[in-house]
Length: 526
Image (cartoon, rainbow, N blue to C red):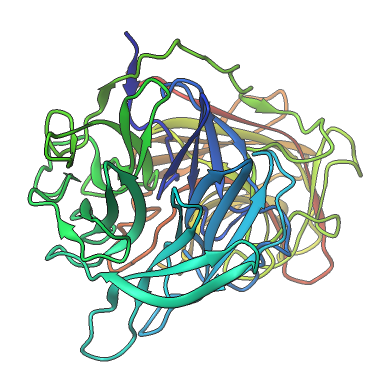
């Protein structure tokens, strides 16, 4: 018998929406300010998963230039009906203060690999939209309702409205069908139908350590909804000993073998409640009681190991650990920040076998950064690249970055100094405060091809550099990177740590750097 090992989607993969079509299983997760939008993973057995595609890959579908940190794509919902995939998502334009500008869209495709349609605008009344296909052929959108007014509950309830396929828009009245439980902060609604009941699954308690999955049901889709008497049906709250914390934001699937599983987000602290990998996705096995309520097996808390369904194992080919940039386009593992890859700043063909990045704006920019990165997905890992870069002045930089957002990152960068010439050093940003960790940068005048490496062991980061063919040398101190976390003090943010390559040219001349390869290796825990 197989076992599901949680989390099934490691690293930054929150807000899962799980879907079965035939004997194929898909999970869509949030991507926030990273492009392309929405990660979709695929499985045949719920045990083994592969990153399959990112459907929002055109600016006409997702234009995030200028959006704030942890804006962009929130909580996608993936469904299927009558030969068509539906993907619903929020593009968050603002999220601080009283107001939230949250625009909800729909794209469709006959095949998971696309082509995905141009977006249909739905509404802007709140975030976390979800589409429900009723058995009478009608379709309904639910989303949390945001109330900006002083003294009111900001999480004002769950808005329900019908969607017309023929008119390609929402129609009819908007009804607030559920205002939540005493856990509050009601969001992430999903509707299901079983045994004559409409079930409304919601996320409550906030996205941190009191997060939870709750359930209510009604005989009519418009309610009234009866709250599950044992809510929450899943939470980590009050159990600091659990490996999986922050359990919440659930999505339900029945396997083709008649078994039930709940996909949910979770997080694993490295220390002191700091979760550098971001929020991840796990699966819990469920069952239905005789009085038709959903329960998680063995108690309402997340387990690290879960019994798999009665499905033959299906193992995917292992992805290579080194990208030699021999293809004409970026692999699915790579992400760009806010903007789409374009020939004006990124090329895999100008110098075949190299990723050429042309320097644009600084690491503080919310607009046009030349940055290509992948998720950190293990506590213990190392990343390595080879770069050719000949800067002319101190405003031109290139190198290896360990990045959370514009406020928090660690950057092993090559630049030019008026006295020392080409040199290497480390930039650190903690809470937006800039620092340089070396008293004096190290000269690189005789090194054309420079190897850069980062080794991460939980909260500890050590950078290295070497001439090609030379011995690795540690550079700078071992640095605590707990600030690369959702949980950094006084912050409310939702992504995770990325490792990648970037170039800046603050003079505006677009000086380029060429990256010959990039490797990412996850290390076994000793």
